[in-house]
Amino acid sequence: MKKSKNRGKKKIQELYVIDEDKNLVFDSEDKVFTFFEEPIQRIEELYQTIRRPDDFTDEEQVEEEESLDLTLSDPDEIWLMESFFKKAPIHVFVKTITKNTLIYDYVAIVFLSTKERNPTFVLSHFPTKFKETAEAFKDGEMIFSHEMEIKHFAGLDGDSILENDELSIGLFKSMLKLRTEKDIPLEKFKEFLETREDTIEAPDEIWRKNDHDGNVFVTFIKEYTETEYDDYYYISITLEENNSDVHTLLFSFPTNDENLVDRYRLGENLQAEEVSQESSH
Image (cartoon, rainbow, N blue to C red; front, side, top):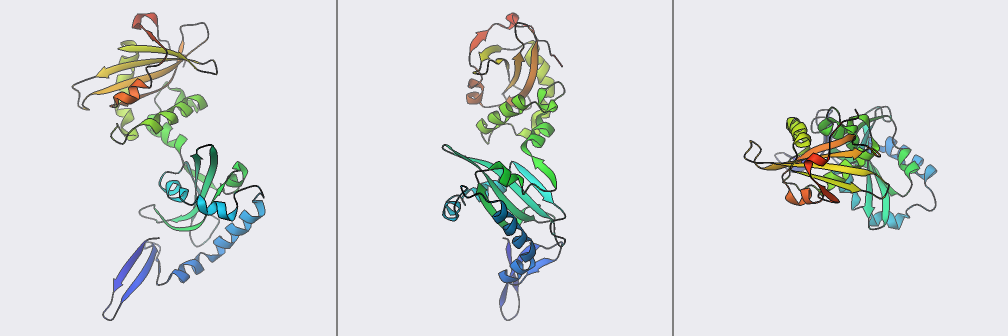
C-alpha cells in the first residue's frame, strides 16, 4: 500500500493514499479496512463457500505468499469486477505458478489507482490448486490476458496467432519465457514486419523438427546486420502439413540473442531450395 507523509506544524501525520483522484486518502490503516470492509467480507464468504478441503491449508498458503508480488507485477489475466463494490471498482489478478512439480493459480483481489493503474490495496489473495476456484473470481470483464497482449503486439497478418490458434500461442509464450531483458521488446515486434517475407523467401537457414505429437515444424532464420536496429535475427516458425510442401505460418519474431536463435536450430538442417513456402491462410 502506498503511503505519504503530510508535514504539519506540530507533527508529521502518516497518510494512506489509495487513490488521490477519487479522494481515497485515509489517516489510519483501520479506516482503509473499514472502507473496504464490505467487499472483503463478501470475498471471504465466497472463498469459504467454494474452498475444497484438499486445497492449500492456511499454513501452506502462508508459504506460497511469495507468489503475490509476481502475480501483481506479471499477471496472466486481469478481470474488472465493476459492479462488485459500488464505491470503487475491484480488479482480480490471476497467475499460474509453477514450482518444481507443483502447478497452481494465485488469485489477488485488488484496488487499482486511477492514474497509475497500479495495485494500491489488496483486499484478499490466496493460492488454489483448482481452476474452478480461481474461475469463481473471474467475474465481470477480462481487461487483460497474455493472449490479448500477444495478439496485439505480435499478431501479424497471415500468422496463426491472430486466429487464436492454441499451438501458436503456446509456442510463442514459451519463446517469451526464454527472452532476456536486453532482447528486442515485444512492443516493437511489428516494426520488423517487412523482414518476415524476406526471411521466408531468402533464409540463411532452414530447420525441420518433429515433436512428440507428430507435428512437423519448419523454421526459417535470417541474420540482419548494419541496420537501424543493430544486428539481429528474424525467425519464422511454420507447421508443415502432412505429405505436402504447404506450410502454415504460426508466428514470427526478431531477436538479438544468439542463444535464443540456437534453441531453434534443432532437427534437420535443410538447404533453402529444398523447401517451397506456401501459406495456407
